[in-house]
Length: 222
Image (cartoon, rainbow, N blue to C red):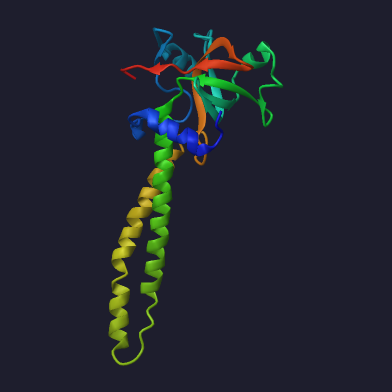
């Protein structure tokens, strides 16, 4: 199993195919109610409604919230340092062997690749925008403090200062994009590092010592 971020990120982007529409991102696990699991289509809408209202008996009890960072990948999916909402991993035994930095490790089959790819894309966009902000800010600072001396210096310096207006407008546009990008990243559990926050099916199976959960295949109509 590989633990390097670059390895799993390349695996994510390569398998995602197309990115999710960023506008559809939202905080929390209530995403993609229609899932395909083991040849069946499951509609999680009743669980979503219960999750929002917390009224009555909980439906679809085998679908539980899984949260945590990806620590590795293997042929089955992602290995997640998870916080399952119920103690299934401990109930199966071997909790100490499954530990990672004090957390349980689980395997998440058919993980939300497109969501991770959106996160990676936003992170890359934010990095480029921040670099652009720094370049524009430095340019504006230089143009706002000209140092031409001698005859006609006043006119020349005034023209130099005036030329700073265009990069100032560009900087405002870049700052607006940075704000928008950060707002989109705020829909994720951690805006700095991709972490899983989803509902997944507890299969009641293990791979070695690692319990297996299944996110399922996202179905049309979500």
